[in-house]
Length: 119
Image (cartoon, rainbow, N blue to C red; front, top):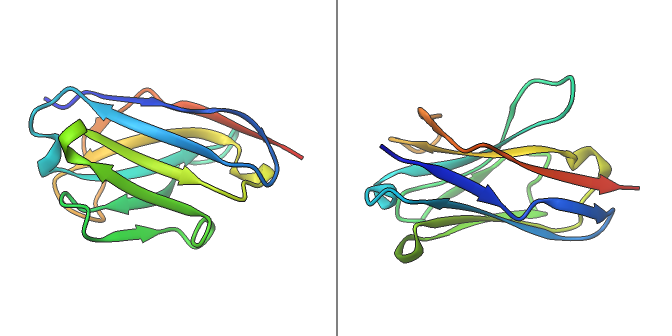
């Protein structure tokens, strides 16, 4: 069982930065690929970024490429999402998701953290 807890969300002005964290208490977390998804009000959940279990490969949605960076520290059982040059359209609840394979969604989800970007 993998439990995920997101943190780091908040209110920021357009052009600002936030760093989200996804922490796990599971001792097998380092064997999972991790995704970040987001869901804005009235919209479907959408993929944001993914990282392999080792951290050696990453993948981004076109909408965040060049602005967001996903990374992980397996010794800390934590995955990060550094978000720079934030835009109002980045406003959403952000979720992390642990998956058995890279670029697949998995069964384990966190509770989400709210990111609000003001114009």
